[in-house]
Image (cartoon, rainbow, N blue to C red):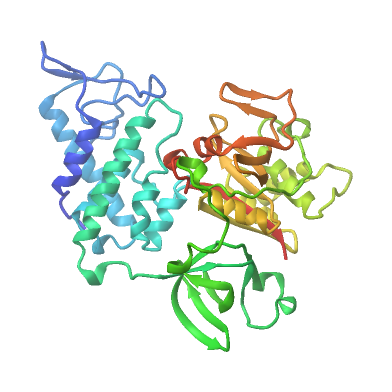
Length: 445
């Protein structure tokens, strides 16, 4: 504890915070409003919103440049550096550039980000020591569609660059070990035992679609053409059937065909698929019709997989009530996964790093897909039911989306949303080559 703040942290934060509103005539620095709210929290000097004595910055406050510099260092040390030093795992193993990148991130978004709601991706990378994934994870936190998005993208890129520079400087023994990557070249399973799949309980088997990648920490056992492996990042020990898998070096050959194209459309398959998932509109829901896209999408997938209404109430309202009873949030993707898996035989694989080929592989395996995106200011969820050479076929529970907003008078059944549209709304931080789509693959076992 008590390590001094590296110069990299101070210079990086000051580069993006700036010391604004200096009046040359008086030499005083004036407070200014938050760019999103136009009011609180008021900021002064180098991004200070709370003085070292605990008082919040007020609208009419002024300070000197000397005070601004002093407040910045004191606040940074006490309210950010010391707090993340206490909370973040593997902190002693990081070097100054890596710590500085995280300090800048914390100064911008809060020292309590680790493990907090809304920060699951970056928290998982740090908790599981997936340090190579941290730069990409940082880019998820840019407040898409807001006036500050452009500046946040530059800041996250600078933090990621500094983190990567620190990774290069690590002693070879401190770097995370290289992990073997295997890729499914056909539809297959992860199994808890090497017996036939029909003999396993639902919790002992996970269907895997063509093209799905897994990282392996080590091999545990072999039996003929079956192999028991420990998957990385705490995913557990599983048996795999080797003829269904290839190494990463061989992964370019199998999987969906990729046409010669550039940008978002380059990931699209040449084939076509439509699962004919039944359509449900959220607008006729009994509970919160303007905020229940989530359970409505879950309802569409479960209906497609054979679930029927129970107790005289439509399925999406039952799902809404069940989440409330469970004390879970319909806005949290992991809580939606939990909801689906409360029904015996139904499973949900949720991932935060999807691309077009991942979604297409799930559809090719006959499994409906739910995707999260910024179709509205607060986010929205749709069902992907198929695809063609130009885009995805979707069931949108709220109607039809246009760049100007939603037309709720139109049906959202089997709409065609282009690959560029999905890239912009579902993976804005990597829309030229989408790889951060949040998506669920829903299936029965």
